[in-house]
Length: 203
Image 1 (cartoon, rainbow, N blue to C red):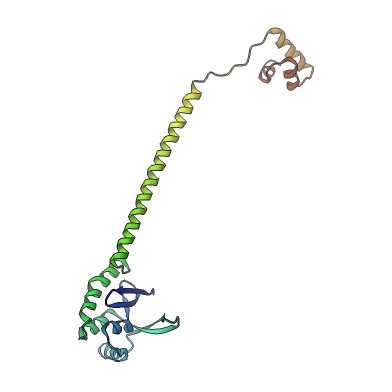
Image 2: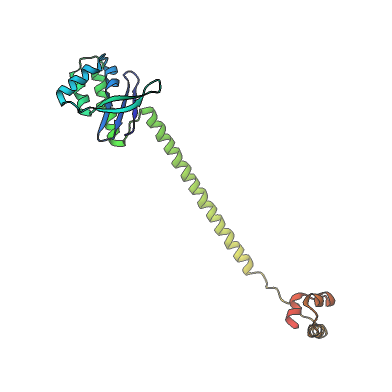
């Protein structure tokens, strides 16, 4: 179970564990919001209403970094406390939980304050814009590459094919004579001043 901390600018904070279907609320935090100075008496009232052993303990760290077993209560038990409480903060706390925290948890699996939510939406929008911009750039590069390929193909298509230079019958005869006598291609090229392709063609 993941611990989440929900903050309200005037009511304070409430720690919640569990999931979006079965959230569990920190009893001590609720008592501090409602200004109940004795959480043990509140827990006794819960046990009297719902039966002993229905509350849960969850290890969390205090302000000093020590791990403490802390009591958490269910959603019905939270409503039970809020409906019985005559503390001034009971109504605004109930409205916050019922109208904002719980609907957001059930819809999204977590709670976002308006400022955080708007920030995340803006970041997501910017991310999508960046992806769209990158996609357009890639498409443009792809079009440029295809155009370059077409131009190269067109250029080579109309280039005249190189032909082996025609030599005189005497030169051809000398090439054949040297080749028959075992002279290598490179030596014939140097001796007669002809191209390698000519030697290979006429030898």
